[in-house]
Image (cartoon, rainbow, N blue to C red; front, side, top):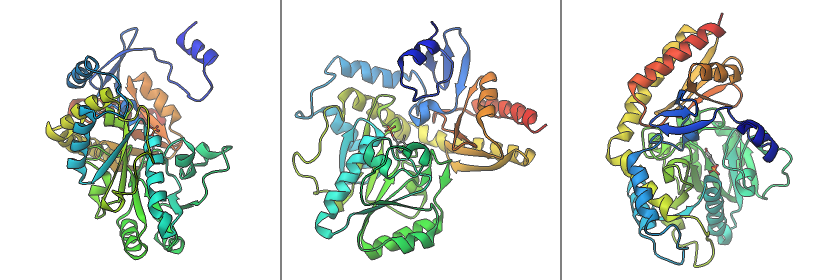
Length: 393
Ligand SMILES: *Cc1c(COP(=O)(O)O)cnc(C)c1O
């Protein structure tokens, strides 16, 4: 039986997988068992910031597994502490907690917020339509997409939704009982939607007035992807809690949330925890990943190559206005909104040896490794052009 047949036999039907048998990865490329090279411009869904088979990350993993793979969080662990120090240095938050994944980090952030709000009679959590915050019950309760929620009711109490970028709706919903607003400053799954300046200003004003916590979900947009350490740095706002994951462990499972001085002393010993979170091998990989991004020029590449890619996409939009409705995003987090479904384009691009992702039905989402080169951008654009030409005939 082929891998595809075995997968269909053994697995719950949760993933519609690409029918490719990957042998290995190298830089921005994935190579199949039969030796075909694909340029990957969704990079493990924003996880593989440094591409595949990065020598420094691999070496850090090898070094750590020869020391210890797991100790439990009863021990002080050098890789956790070094990674915490780096994240706090680049984020300017005060405290951190490590988890295994994005959704778990979001759960922890929600628990932190709830505990903070207990003696303040604040309990209501507001998030936005089109958002994605994870698949566990807390995170799913604040995820604003029916596709992921249907059938899983009832959800966490004290959660409700507002329309993204709708200032007046938000003003009408926020009050003294508001505990937290959870926001992606660029919605990923929702189709690369950016928070407007007005919207961010409104949130700032409301926070000054009512004193709720602002929780930024930077799981996809964070750690250099948009050309800044966090996407919120492009805007005039600083959240109280920030949640990260995807690229944090250099491809190994790792998430975290960080908080400012307001929430620094909310947790007390034993009130939150995890067995595997902050795994030392994942942290060792994370240290090299963050250093590579922030100290060895990768973030600069995300800015210049991201701008170059966006410019080229905008010229494609000018050429094919009947097909492309919009090009948006920042750095290496870009979306091409089409007038039609993008499933066909994804398949056509696969024929042209480029791996692209489709989200929210009609948005081609580009989340390339931050090490993507101009030459690779040129190749991607050429292949898009060929596809778009066929589709707009
Ligand atoms: C992927 C993602 C999550 C969930 O992370 P998991 O590691 O899959 O649990 C949450 N929020 C955003 C914005 C994401 O992109």
